Length: 112
Image (tube, rainbow, N blue to C red; front, top):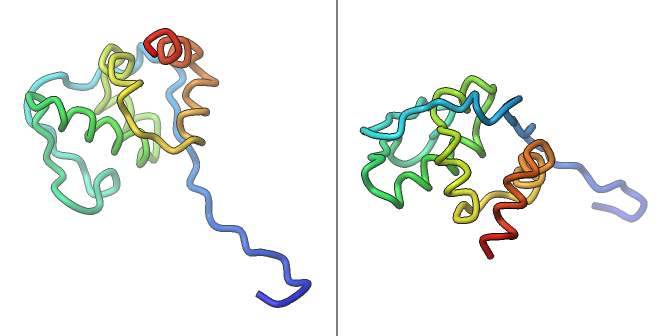
């Protein structure tokens, strides 16, 4: 970058948030195989019987969702609420979800 040149903006991926948490009715048991657009590197299989893999699945889906249907298909409302504090999410993603669903932010502050 030269003097006087404006800094280039990086592409910001849109954050997808469901209209309502009760629309999240994904599976809560079994082995889930995510499509390539949600898990483009590493193993796309998640065994929901393994606690650490559940958090990994939810983080991947929340971060990579292209449409609300991705969220509805793979996430479960109660599991999102239960895992919300444990998931590492980019600030912009966490803020978007908590702006739509203040109960997630309240849960986080009361759980601390």
